[in-house]
Amino acid sequence: MVDLSLLAKAIDEGNREKAIQLTTEALGAGESPQDIIIRGLQAGMGVVGEKFSNGDYFLPDMLMAARAMKGALEILKPSLEQTGMPTIGKVVIGTVEGDMHDIGKNVVATFLSGSGFEVFDLGLNVPEKNFIEVVREKKADILGLSALLTTTMPAMGRIIKTLEEAGLRSSVKVIVGGAPVTQDYANFIGADAYAHDGGKAVRVCKQLLGE
Ligand code: B1M
Image (tube, rainbow, N blue to C red; front, side, top):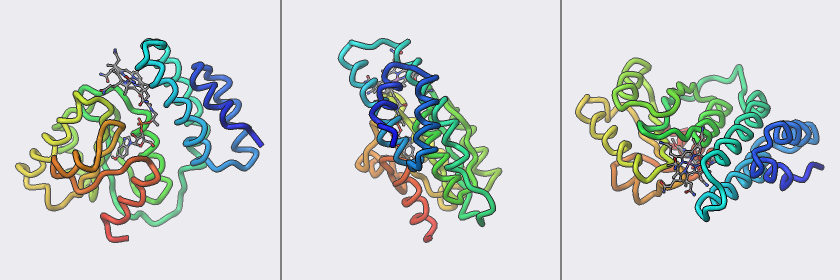
């Protein structure tokens, strides 16, 4: 058994090599990718966030932690993605403009594709018009918007308004998420759904499509 708190520590220390090694070992020992993410990687990132808030960590510490987490997620990706499943629906997803946080969005996108959704990931810092264009072009069933900053959350509401103006709102369900986002905020901006994490996002997206 691999002690996942050591993986959390490797993320906290921004030790990419150690994070990759422990993730590989945990997977080999039969830990589920979901557990590795939640009890190892996310737990570590939580500590990094607290230390940043307290002034113990600075931007380079967050960057190192992000690099370590991305390395570990690459190891988990093949186990989370599955092939040969009939597609449940099309999801366009991205982090809104002005926001450079993509780790959580990547986790959500990977969980969704691993659960049978066809996912079009537009990346981070995505301009409003790109979301609209791709939703139209791909005839998306669901639009997923991620924001990690209180200052970038309002972009989600603007995108919903623009979908309405473009006549696309009735054909696409909108799900929002990210650390500062809440169910109340989702209601306030007129989103169809909110999810707290990757696992919930999968369940909610299935519900939105009547699965
Ligand atoms: Co920044 N950052 N950051 N950061 N960063 C936060 C978000 C912060 C809370 C740290 C803190 O102060 N404690 C704070 C925001 C404060 C606020 O707005 N209230 C903050 C700040 C201030 C900043 C800068 C302004 C710092 C500066 O420059 N002085 C700057 C902003 C840059 C910008 O975006 N314009 C900045 C920069 C960065 C880095 C680039 C260094 C790096 C990001 C690297 C990257 O993503 N490629 C970074 C990091 C790593 C963090 C923390 C430490 C970790 C974020 C993370 O990856 N978490 C973060 C503190 C924290 O959140 N504890 C922090 C792990 C990830 C798996 O969780 O992203 O929450 P999360 O995703 C979850 C759920 O939220 C949910 O599911 C995911 C998986 O379970 N979810 C969805 C996410 N999207 C979803 C979408 C859905 C559904 C669920 O549906 C579509």
